[in-house]
Length: 568
Image 1: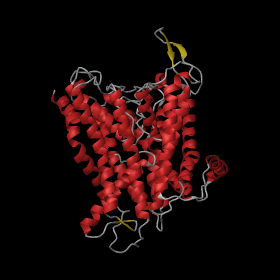
Image 2: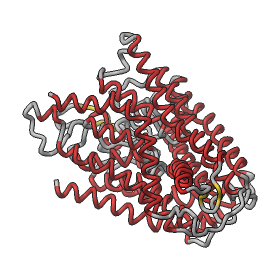
Image 3: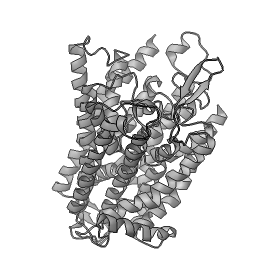
């Protein structure tokens, strides 16, 4: 166990050490300063010409959002076309069928919003064509969309910023060419050499050690897994995601894939400070995010290493931890590390089945998505955190009797209204969806019997987790839920849309409004936002909002299940 603990500590510390220079690099390329990757400029200029983009033309915050929404609408149409016709398209050696319209709608929306909630089994639900030219394509462009929107906010918060906030397409293209492609290629190369398939050949016939004949799915898996992890996408090439021995063959592949989950989210937090030339501010953001993350991660590792009390009461040895739903070759600590890192971000990939986590571990995974601000997705994680900064600045200003200011710009009623609406939208979508589903199930349990494999407290947790995952653009699930039905496909699809675009529109609008305001130089009475004191304020604002909103629902699900287990 000590070696396993050392292993997960090395994974996390190595990721942080890599994120520091990456954060500096991100700030450099987005500011347009000289960089080693400038050799890509001719290629990027070619892309601008092909797309009819004038990279020198700066945009207002409204123009940025219009560009973002317009290209996302085009991508949705492409995804629907591919998924509904994939059975007739090329690169389908296994002859997988096309999706039904409601499942295609859910899948297209899910990958469009960088959530990657999968109501299908990867290797049997998609063809090689749709995996590469629809799913993997969306994993690149949607991650870049979030990063580009984040840079718009960075721009608006610069000293001397005005109405013009750079060019969305420049930030979008650089996110792909200079960050996502090289990093995902590096991850893909590592896992290819560890045994992950990268081929266009059909299923391979295999004779097992027991003498049974079967077929093992192959395909262009490594390429997709690289961007799935780096872009906090998470949609698995195989149905069981990175718990599959071909998607995650060894402990080295597990370490690389696990570190890739939080690499860019941590780097973006640090890039915020470097971009504004206020590195202490970036470290404050990183510190608050890390404190919240550790508050979830440490107890989860402990709980999974000590096993399930219900199994202990049966006299079964759990010295290796709670191994139900986990890969023996990875172990309980590495599974617990992944479970929390994938849910404090918008990644959602898994190397163990979250439905089999101990109740409080499952609650911690949900809390990571409910707070939705500890690391978060690439770009959008900082946007969520930015909303809580605005709320914390406003409350702090009221406490000291001063007009709230952030980086020399006054926070007034208009900005606060937007921030509060975005902060409350998240729990509204989660709790309303769960309440409606619970009402339908209780009203007619016979008709909806296929929804829940585990009625009772755990069944409620399965429904709560599904909407939490959708609202947090995460994509993981308590897979005891029968989710491939018109209700779950359509209802989560609506939640996915609202929870992706409104939390992007809100922070960008706040930043755009702040950019237009007159800059107020710092004075002796200015609230410093790069200090540990302010970090503590932000931390408690996040937890108070999450606790007040979600405690009743958590009490009905994982908490009730936990106390029931310990009462036996």
